[in-house]
Image (cartoon, rainbow, N blue to C red):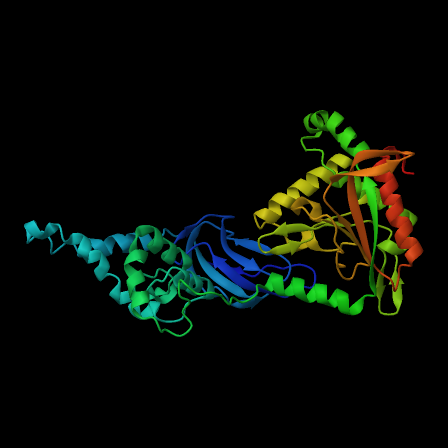
Length: 421
């Protein structure tokens, strides 16, 4: 029985996605809960698994296609045995059949393999998905010389990668160089390359520009002495990791400090909706994470109820899932305030851009030893610049500056976080 694989619910306000990559080809065996296709939305990249064991019978949506929620992606024949492998064996079986007559010429049997390429030439010369075309062009391949295993003999990304590893790419390279004038084919010595923006990158660009165009954005700065937090972390990090199974970082302290400040200055946690102001009595703290695909902001839901260990575990989990492309739209929705840490990349100071519809964002930066005045003496201390960008339409300067000072005080004296003062 054929089971339909459809586009799942993509999350809050997300109605369509792009088919980024097929992990399986038509005719391949698939296992229950095994990822078979990768979708890219405005917010995240997510994998769609097969609900049953069987064979991927038909791929309906090709790589690069835009698909809506509940659109048909593929059909899986439940319980079926993979047909592709027997078919592959039967083809060579028919080729060796004439070989026994001229026994001395048994050696040319490998030459029968290239003979299998021409039947696919017409299909390979047809429409290539964006991902396959990019891979073909980057490696100067002749698509007509590669056997396609996709629907109707189309080339898949796996077919091209197999050709590269198997060495047929090197044979095809001269074909590409022999025709130096094919329109649109990027040569190996090209000085520039034009590629389409991904949906995620387009959405990041759109939202950041929207924030600049809409909000009356202003940034205020302060600096924080990290000595106390660093000493506390150095003293207890080993015990903390043994007790909770998570490394003790700095993000947990900043999340707790931010929540203390938001509770005292609720406008910083609010947002504008039309002509109304929505004050939120919960604290969903977004933690900006950089990925190869772009910046994503998973959210710590109801962070006011999380312990320091819970926060550190969640932040670590978000980082790993972002790296592996495992974040879901639900992980990204509902944030009320964002923390961005440019310090992990070496940034000394920046002016972070708001994450709409939120009204404020805190920027952390690199910890750097600097001489500062302590009483009447000059001492070398590990210092960090903090930046708070905020929407001046809803947050006054007094509130913004006071909020940032409260965060600074909590970090410089972590006992405040324990006492909630």
